[in-house]
Length: 319
Length: 244
Image (cartoon, rainbow over all chains, first blue to last red; front, top):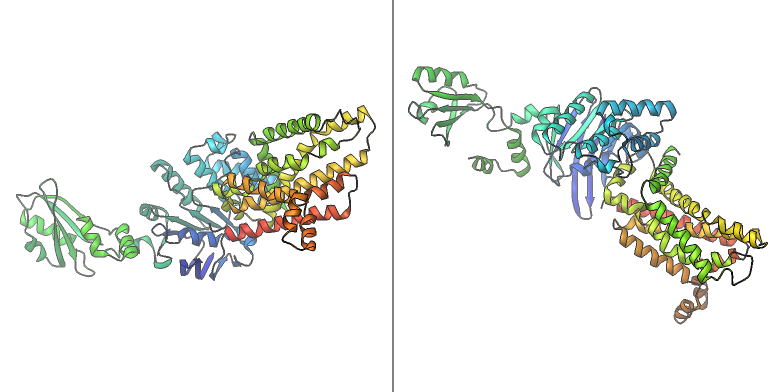
């Protein structure tokens, strides 16, 4: 459990984290979203006891981090941004070092290390020095040191940044597999990642909390949520007015396409679902439908809307 | 204590993971020999002691110790491992001590490689072994003081070259503090008591009095308190500059 209350951090006169309050419960995977420089990393550095807050408090498993950082650090695993590692050590030496610092001795140390090697598949590079590893392996070593002691709280700062799609998928699967009854906080600016692994998302901008909801609830905030996209062939197509008169339709947008087909986006009235109506009208009117789909709303739109505060601006950029 | 021990062992092993250890040891022993036999005229002196050897230590340390200490914290900061290290369940003091003790132990190991000189001088004559032992301990203490200064300055910057140069210059000031040249210079500005204070900070005078075979409590205390001060400063500086 992580409890963050009125957390602020200033660097000189610059406020990087501004009055953040949130809690994360076991079993939750919290996605920490925000543009670069929004204060994600700084918040994580404070939760892990690396930086001290300028104001506010953080409790990790009931322990005040500021008062007893070492106690809190025992219960948490942390992957700092970019997964820094001691490059001149081999993977085995490095994991042994981390296990020693965490106070594991003798047989238990070996069991722990073996378990984690197995979990993140490091057997093949065990005796290679870390500087010779690929980015994907380095990230796995970083993850390995973070989960070695089976922590109750896992803080991951951009765990998939800079990895190729396969490696990203792997890391996400790992996180997903560990998430049960742990508290996981991960920061990212890849929105698909939030949809893929997070049960909850927090969006921060300029150090402030902008949104705190499930990814699905955030998507529903998109102006395009539940809008219907209809593509028809040019020679058998409805007019925008025809579409606008359908029951439940609030407005229609005409979107140009490259292929010469006609593409319409229909926005429903509040709380209505209109895809059925459109389908029936298409049959009755004899339109040649190329495609008809329901849009779920897009997280990146919501993200941009919240962090820049410019909804109209977005739509123009899309068109 | 787990943390301190683990950091110490990692750090010490780290010297041998890279060529640093071997380069440092070979150069130290080679230069110590060169200075002792050629510049110190070990044989020409016709005396069964190691003064010709120990007299060069403050100068050897002057450029070799900064080379050892420059990476202590600058490297952690540059590579980002500082964040990794300090979010493991250890206190900053443990981390600083662990790294420092490893560097000191490594210096001690290097110093131990010069023991054949001791054997040689015992073979050639009958030296006062008490004096030699005291000198070795004094030399180790002095190296510790150099290292503590280096540790602190390495914490200020992420650039190892800057850490090297500033450490060397700071150590030079401590060595030269007892020199008439420096004392005459400050003597023109400062009162006599302050000049004495400056002189009392000289590594050279403290080391020389140990070298005479008097491992006096005062000289030992001088080096130990200097080490404590600079290590404390290291902790304060890292704490202050974490955010950078």
